[in-house]
Amino acid sequence: MDIPINLWMWLLAALPIIVLLILMAGRQWGANKAAPLGLFLALLTAYFFYRADLSLIGFEVLKGFWSSFAVLLVVWPAILLYEVVSEAKAFVVFRNGLKKVTSNELIQVIAIGWVFTSFLQGITGFGVPVAVGAPLLLGLGVKPLYAVVIPLLGHAWANTFGTLAVAWDALVLQTGIGNDQTLLLQSALWAGIFLWIFNLMTGFAISYLYGGKTGLRKGFVAVLIISTIHGGGQLFLTQINRTLAAFVPASIALIVIFLLSRTKRYGNKWRLEESPVMNRDVNTVGEDEYPENMSVHQAFFPYYVLTAITLVILLVGPIHDFLARWQIGFSFPETETGYGFLNPAHDLFSPISPLTHAGVFLIVASIIGFVFYRVNGWVSTNNGVDIWKRSWNKTIPSAIAVIGFVVMSRIMGGTGQTLVLAEGIAANLGQIYVVFAPLVGLLGSFMTSSNMASNILFGDFQLTTAQILSIESAPILGAQTAGGSIGNTLSPGNIILGTTTAGIIGKEGIILKKILPIAVTAAIIIGAILFFAIILF
Image 1: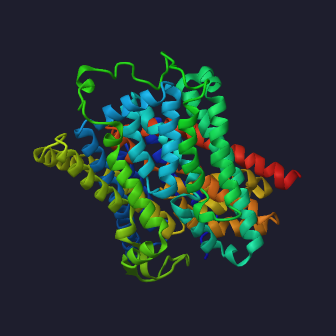
Image 2: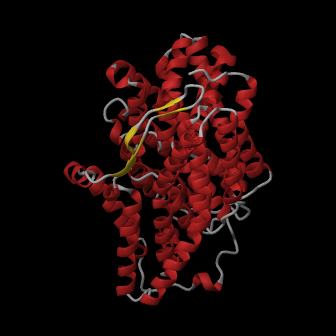
Image 3: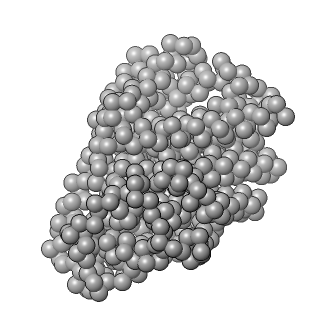
């Protein structure tokens, strides 16, 4: 590869990302407006400066459209499930029921926004925790903006080893560390340590968002206990069974949070009236109207179905292996830029297994949920038509943004722009690069909306950089995937899922502005810890 690594080429590669950050975080543009512009800049840079011919760009665009379909296969069903539950007024029932289980409002928010979304990330991933968590928080009376911010923060720690460790497996395959058991276990250990730190930070961040210093004091004990289960449990299991390293602790925490709600500290009624997170005007007459013969478990029935389907299909080996045999994908030829940057051929690019895909689980849960509600008289067949129309109408703006972001990332990755960004940083920083290693993983997730893709994109680069700088590889690889998990809080795809199900499409820039300082701070803290651990000591 002969791409010149200089300031000019680096700035050109960074331009689409810089413009996106300015427009979304600075000017508060919606994702569906900013994404096409970012894509246009990436196209111009690829053709005029990175020597990519039209055939290469065309193939990368097609790859981007296919990858976008995989994301949208979650977006629309997630909206559909939300509309089904909302039409039956089940969110109101669930909100009232959760308030009876625990009258501590902060614990209610933590239970849904951190603990339950982590559980969903452990088994499904693909943005489902945000898509499901946002409307549930709305039902508790959380303002729409924070109903998206909180699950974005709450689920991300489980991203590496969640979804049965698909992101971790991608890192292992990309770097080849599976051939060295010692390096494999050490890398997993470091990832577990960094993710525990991030998990603890998100728990405190949610408490702080709810009530500042008062929220921190009130939630302190609960956060420590849950984080010990989440982070400590995951760290322990990274050395035993990485496939279940996130799922098992997240499941245990789901039980513990309800036990905590019965303790003396959290069992009494408590809420902060001036909490900036809560909408105190939520109890309007319209929202108080709900089926009085509907129980909390009946209201939550579609989510029980979703959980059951996911657990059975993903955890029962024979069933999963049988259903996963059917894969859909497309072949792509090898392509090369004028600078010699090579994209390998694919017999089956990014294949989708429809019967084991989270989107299909959501569709089935939506259909079963609708039938259940209709049998009980809480929705009608006519409601079904309205639900279908609303779901499609809400998906269209999301689709524009998702396609724009994903195609942009494919063009940047397929023409060498992404690699130039990372190599430029490493070449100029030397061993100080260690501090920024998590930011590389974060950048990958922000660009691709996937920790798995970030690990594929930058995993080998991080390993090579560590070897060039003569530093330990394991902590660098751990920082890469931990940074990728942090980056999922900024993932445009996840943000769009949240704004769509929360009904605030177009507010993606405001949400990015809220989360960006938290995510970058978390990545830098982990980078600083990494630097002190392996460079100074």
